[in-house]
Image 1 (cartoon, protein in one colour):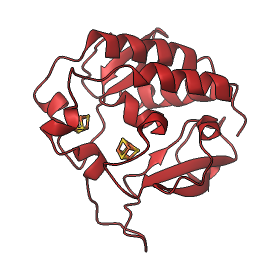
Image 2 (cartoon, rainbow, N blue to C red; image 1 turned 180 degrees about the horizontal axis):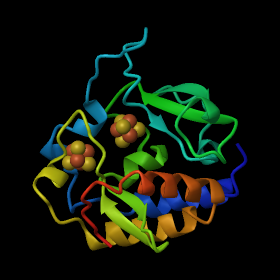
Image 3 (cartoon, rainbow, N blue to C red; image 1 turned 45 degrees about the vertical axis):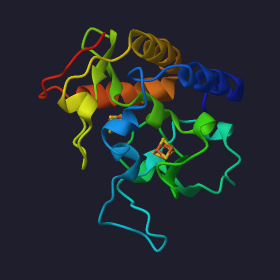
Image 4 (tube, rainbow, N blue to C red; image 1 turned 180 degrees about the vertical axis):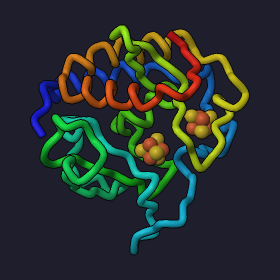
Length: 189
Ligand code: SF4
Ligand code: SF4
């Protein structure tokens, strides 16, 4: 799938998000890194959970060699899954082999955004919300309504403003946002 976002931009986004954290300490110490370690019951022959892998955004794979020994790669086809109609062709799905240990500088975007998620309201405005996705683990940041660092929120917002300039990513955020019309959302911005 052809992304309009260059490797240079993805690398810059990784660097920007490397500088911020949801709170002023490693939030993994609050929960034994639940979002990395959560086990599931649909494992493959390597003992890796299919449900809890991470889809990379279109073009994000450019930041990887695909030979990282801590990641297992699956190449899927967007048309086989519930992605926007504009998505067609290869998409990359990764799972961590050694959670919570990874090469932190190249951990995927999805690991960096959580617990925030982008949301485009009916009037077309970009917001950040607390991820409303049902999860098989408890994130203390969400459950205890812990205030997130302003710098983390600001960096996420900057990144999402850039990312949704890519039509494929815009379509994904719009589709996810539309699916939330019955859910009560926690807006951060
Ligand atoms: S984001 Fe939530 S679940 Fe993940 S490590 Fe931080 S507190 Fe734990
Ligand atoms: S890539 Fe790193 S941060 Fe992301 S889930 Fe795996 S171990 Fe956790």
